[in-house]
Image 1 (cartoon, helix red, strand yellow):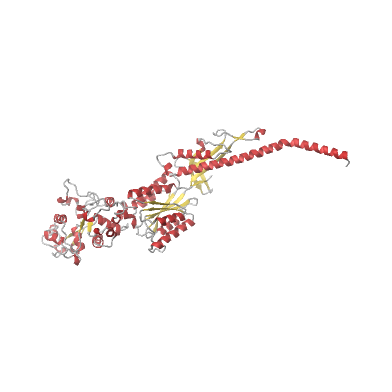
Image 2 (cartoon, one colour):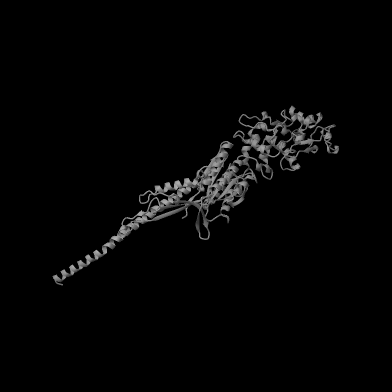
Length: 609
């Protein structure tokens, strides 16, 4: 190609290129503008979603706290404020976003098994979810979103929205409650040096008080006139009393470090193989109708080594009537057939007695055995926890030592069911705290379910997972310390919790948690054998098993005897928290309630939409 032809070709090519550029330039500029604004929209949308997520999650957490779910505040208003704060702190393209009232919506979220998703239903009645919408719209406080280059197409603004729904994740919670016998220790004499035991409150709540006529040896109308106080009242008009116990009354109500059983007007010391000289007792026997020879025989320790001690004490206390056979004796005025009386000697023999039936739900034969067990094998013994607390309790008889006998030796429901309805401590504190937990969960409306598992020597499932929380608190109120048996099978209790949380009653979408309560130390192993080291090891093994199955564990201990190290370790294994309550009965009762409320409010808040 010659030079002229080549030059002409080049010129034509340049002209075509120039024309192409002229024609394409608006398209290129539009594409660039579109790319920039699309990126702007993408970033704005992402920022708005972050703000909505933060607002919904923060409001959900705020809504779940007891402080804001209580009756004295407006949790919805407070949650709205919290959502607005978090949205404002998460700027969108550098702009602080605002929410209108309609941008925060409360409701209930429930899992729909058919779709595998959550369904949100707006309501402000016990909401468990909150939906936050962040808007760049004409009717929002933020207005439309300005665009950078789209104005070349006549579009300067656009509308964007982002919403997030957070819910209080529903939980299936197994309450694992310690029912060992130690849960009545703060009502027993064994602990009077450690805390202000509430035995008076317990005794006052037992059946058999003055209103329960006929439950003592005498009907109220038959109480000797000498027992009536100058103001016309009967001594100790509250709580049960038996025979001479009714005259003694409860005695000292406050037992502290200075307490001396020998000085307690509610106790009488009737020592073995000793001639008793208590004038009040002697006069009471005369008032009951015994003659002088009978009273002298009852007060004499002559035949105690021959086995008469228990029966002699029982007669002295009015727990049994002695048909002695003495000429002109009480049996005569009572009209007892001579063939059914004793041989007239001074030995208070068992076959000569008519036993007083106790105020408890025992048969007459049981009552006789219980009275003698209390006298011979408990009050006279040096092998009781009562004696270990103070050796001066030996041979002391009265309401305190008899109620203590029942608490220490007959705590089970099958033996003394009356204990289920009296304020045994710390058992009552546990009952009250669980009741407060159920009240809180009802107020919070979080779609949780509770079950009740208990453990003593054995571990048992009591209440299925349910949203009727009253079933749990009511069942617990029916139970007592040592309800079935006396030891502390904590590992077995945790296992019962695992079983219930993996039963058909558990929900696949719920979070799983176990709340373990105790006042003592694990001492039963996986084979049901008593051992503190093995019991502790078994509890830890079951905690690991729960953790491996995704179950969170909260532990709650109460009192100075609780193994707080073990409870803290179990909570750590279960990715939960350990709480401890101690101090006086009033202090740990209050602490327990706050602890259970805290656990009730420790809910996971999850974004579901």
